[in-house]
Length: 141
Image (cartoon, rainbow, N blue to C red; front, side, top):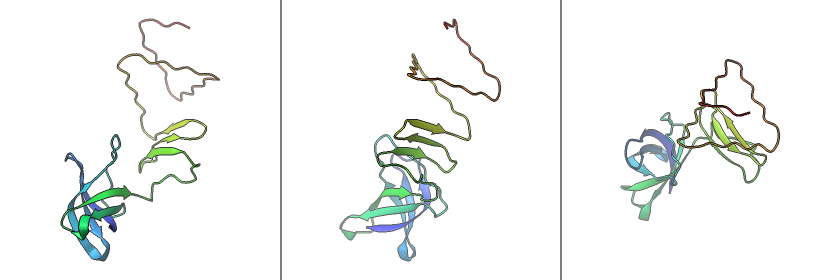
């Protein structure tokens, strides 16, 4: 097992390949970055994201990276059991103990191919700084 930093990544392959600079300046190219099903991310290539690699039988010729982490952007002060997806821009989907928080400094787009239902057991508040538009064949209030 070895620890290092990501210096390059190729996310165009079926399984991302990363170049990792390990301790003592050992560079390994084309290590496969194994990710959990349903989740993917593209690491920054500034030698700040940390990589954790495994080399089976100690053979350094064909290893895998099982985790890439970037402590600069990790959310802190989460409560036990909470989960979040986040990036370097401050965007996040945060499953808190109290509910779901979605934040972005950019645009939020939701596309629903069929029907959408929103049920609110309490109050509903919408604040819009600019214009608001509703386009529908009919509206029932």
